Image (cartoon, rainbow, N blue to C red):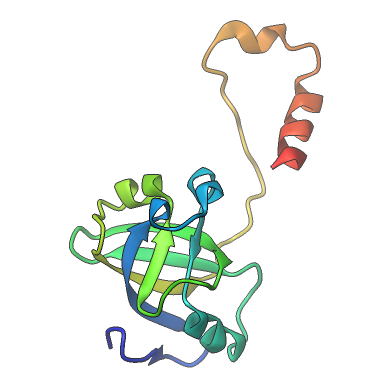
Length: 139
């Protein structure tokens, strides 16, 4: 069902929205993250479900079969619309006003990460572990 109501699948949320870049609203910080803005009706439906927190969503562009994942920042968008970072729209090959399918998702937690420096400048850092800890808690 498109825009007129929610698709109910037990404890899942799935809805289609028209997507627009964050530049359409006064939320410049949205461009620097991986979160979207959804309408209040989405919060109403999500509140009635027993979903995992933090709320994570799968975004699906049916026209190109591109998929990505995101979180939600706020529930203040107009009904039938979502706002997302422009880089996310580019990744999904979406244009202003295209339809994107939003579905709640549960992603496994990471247990391991291996980083590879792009330059030798990394070797000049006196305490790389402290730098990563600072970056982790700064965001």
